Length: 116
Image (tube, rainbow, N blue to C red; front, side, top):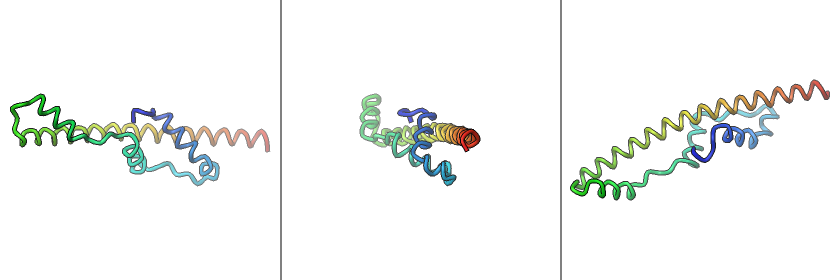
């Protein structure tokens, strides 16, 4: 999600779907479609090995059970954070897509009035 902001992401989707939009066949991607796209492209997977090393370094006296419990807690926390950020990002991107399509349709209408 850090690689693009919502406006740029929306522009990319609109540009890649321009033919569908002009034909009136474009459907704004659903929340689920957007989430899959974002997760596949922008979310780093939880690195268990790296996190386990950090926990061992911070808590050298902990048992493997304590380390595993902390690892699970961190993974759940990261997943909650990603879900929250993803929902916020998706909602903003969908709003931007809708604004861009509305603006595009208004410009097409103006062009038709002036040129046809």
